[in-house]
Image (cartoon, rainbow, N blue to C red; front, side, top):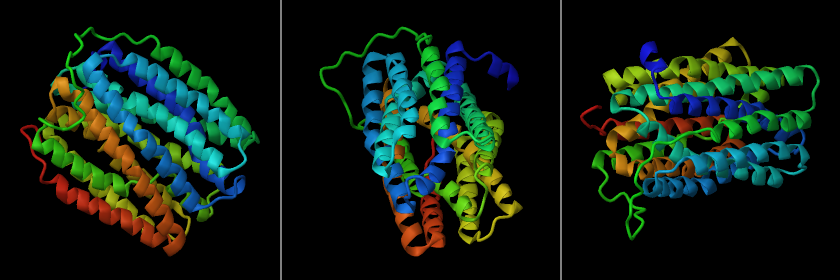
Length: 388
């Protein structure tokens, strides 16, 4: 595996490093937002659900648009540069806000940047390698992304620990953001002839039935995947110290980064559905245990490590399976629909979870996510293709 990994195209490695740097900026801010929201902006779970839901859902349409445009132009670089630029410039603005609607606007800008770049980036990764290495490539990308999610929270923990204010930490996030944009300008793409058609096709017409069924499974699983900020909000309620929260989140990212590449590479050999099913089962168990957690002890750290394993078994494999099920000339559109659905479903996921959390209690909210995951798992086992 390591020999094959080192032989991956330069484009794959460069995109990996860009994701690492961008995520270090994002995750330096992300685990501090629940603290900032509750202690500075004086808002609770409902506001968090609205912020995360709208920010993800309203940007999700861009993921389809840029995916379809990629299929016609075969150019991803402009979307990556612009997407990383918008996200990177928006995060430091959190230091200047005084209300949660302003935070909503900034999170929206951040997610718009992600919406612009996600589908072209995923299609570019798939087109940069052979089908036999899809799992390895997407697993490696997720590992690099999660490596940034280790660096960012640890930087935040150190800065909080030495007494740097939250506002100044948000401002410092501009440094890695500028570096990520600079590296994206260095990307080189293979030259493809643009597809010349009179009409843009936004539909899934011609896509395999197994891909459409897979999107239904992804939709229900995403409904279960409310913002991870709720997990951090919960451990804060249980009494975790401020400096420990970024460390906990860095631990999740560490586990995910270590296991993403080998898990996804193994899916090249043993099949995507096995790893997706195992990852989703792990997710279900994590949320069932979190529904019962009522005190802060070492078990919480173990549970979050288990959560990292579930992410490692699914994040790269989910995208590799999209590439498996679709043809090259449909890939941008396919990733567009995949990213559209995962983005759009995050609105009801976060909104409903936040409403249930504040209105009916933490147990009901976590059980809702577990049940949605079970429905997704049932649909997933009906998805089969020759590589499944």
